Picture 1 (cartoon, rainbow, N blue to C red):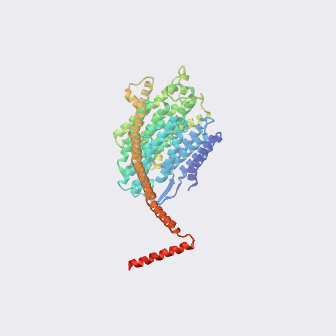
Picture 2: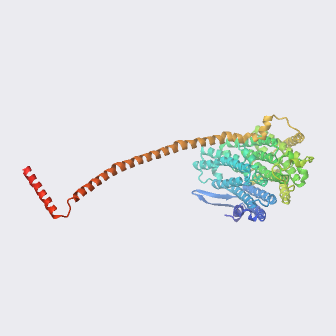
Picture 3: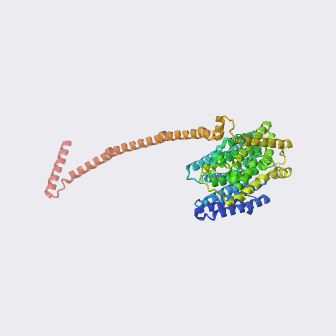
Length: 623
């Protein structure tokens, strides 16, 4: 294996395992060690992106564990490593002295290592292994502060939801083998025979939509906001939720091979971008707003994958990673300082903590898709690909872009308003605030904000052509000038409307507002449609097992015991009785036979005489 590729994979996994096992004994050293490891991993990622190493080793009969850094994975490894470093540097000042920093930094590195394996895996078995490690690490990170029951429950909901969707990968692997793809190489999946090709594609689509929090799986991301803000900044910007979109971008040839999968994926992404954008507009909790916007923004990547826009989806992924991780870190800084994440209580927070406020404002305006910031150009690349799928798909995507401007400007409007007369009244709703922002927060915030602002250069003609060559998508369409102008006009109009209406209530039906605020009641629907029937079936099967299966076993056992008792009685009263009777008779005969044995000679003489007399009588009578 290439030394660079080995370092890229083994360092975060090994160091993460060691740090996670150190416990709180090395709390002071752990943050610096974690950040140092992340810095080395970033260096290895850049080297791997330049050298493009590849390696493979036998795994099962006819299957290999393959790793490679190609054009698309080169972009991903650098993005994942850079965001990991920024988040871990920020997290060095976020935890109290008595918290187990070793477990946190170790799990973060383990998660990052699993994500790096995911994006470099060239075979489905290795991707599955990394996918599972990533899911387990995310469960532990979301429930990091597990002593509060609601956080442990949130981790369980997130894990079980994504885990249920992940079963699609196992289905895909089985279908691929049945369809003749014995090697299970990702680039060979489109060669599977029908109908197994369609089964494998459906499994991968379900797994990707679940991991990327697309409809109908989006609700798990709302529950995941119970985790620490650095966890949200890493998992829900460039890694976990992006993994599903990355997998779809990687397997665009598979989507094209089935004909139905591409349009289905494109519409799933477009509808999610619009619906979860409206959910974000209805939120009054800043982290919930950012979570819903994450599902919506990932929807643009999924839309790009379904439309064949690999370069546009990649640009959206990279720009969103920098933007959203910076926004989550800013929200985390305010949560630590003020103890709240409620938007009404955060009024004036950008004025009170100006560096964080500046970073948040730039990130939110980037998320709004305002030109010339990065997500404006990235969305136009995605919409250009969507337009090839039809005008309706393009219109839904454009409407979702307008909604993105609304929820982004809404957040900016809240945090930039003047401080109220008694700001303290709204603080400390989630935890006790420190009333200060850690010194380690500024550098990663400014770095991510700068990246969020300038990564739009990837959509300029020259860099866009280079990116398309890099990811092997030279024939993808580029946005026409009128598309750029239209999207810019729509974004500015929506932003202006949101700024004007942010100070007052919007006339929306109460039912619609409640549904949007409650994430479309997706979790309630999942509990009603899936969880309760499954639990009911489990209880029914348990009762059947207890009363019928176990009952039959118990009845059989009781019958066996009754038969044994009867056999014992027969043995004791019959066979043993007969044996005892024979023995008693023989003993009596023995006693009778002992009576003549007196030892006296005259008695023996008399007995002989009697015996002789009996013989004489027998002879006389017989004759």
